[in-house]
Amino acid sequence: MDEWKKALNDDRFKNEISEQIIKMNLQIEQAKKDLKKIGWAIFGALLSIAFSIIIANIR
Image (cartoon, rainbow, N blue to C red):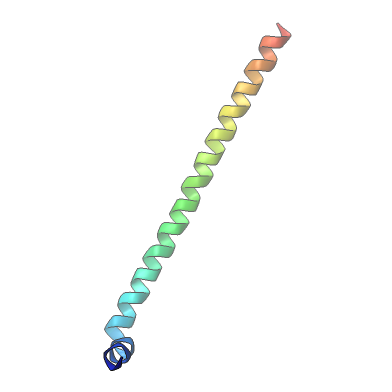
């Protein structure tokens, strides 16, 4: 238990944890952006299909 307390008080250990958290947050932000792009791509494809069906029915 004392080893853990020493490790948690060690600045290098704290810096390493902080770096890992920052990296994870950046990856999460990137994943959100990627999901938005995928969402818009799917939306665009569905819109395209819908218009194709509407135009086919008009003819």
